[in-house]
Length: 146
Image 1 (cartoon, rainbow, N blue to C red):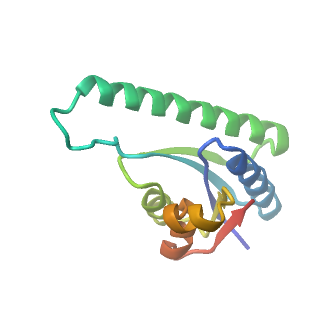
Image 2 (cartoon, helix red, strand yellow):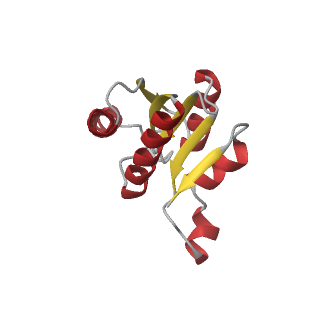
Image 3 (cartoon, one colour):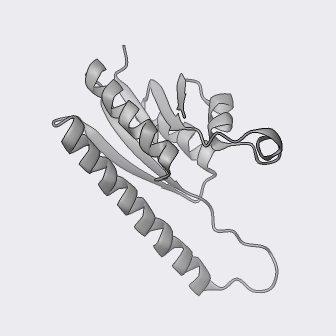
């Protein structure tokens, strides 16, 4: 049924559960799997001069975190589904939901798997969630896991 699954992962507990589900789905359907980590745009406040060292430190930290998330994903695939066709992707300087949907379109994914942080009440109303935005923007099915 599915040929190419896109997993959006940020290294959180919710995304680790989503990763396991995505690997199992890819294995069951004989699908390829793309694991995506999106680096949020640098949080520039617009006050004073931009500090290039702050930007460099931010990007170095984000890229190191992405590398760890990708290494964890490779280890999960080796242990759960050896031989699974896994591609690792990094999107930078884009809002997470937009980066996920754009990558899904560019890669030809027919399913997006994403973890939910399970916000409720006022936090959900005020902050929203990346998963909610992906569901609203995506042209392909989205599986949100808890």
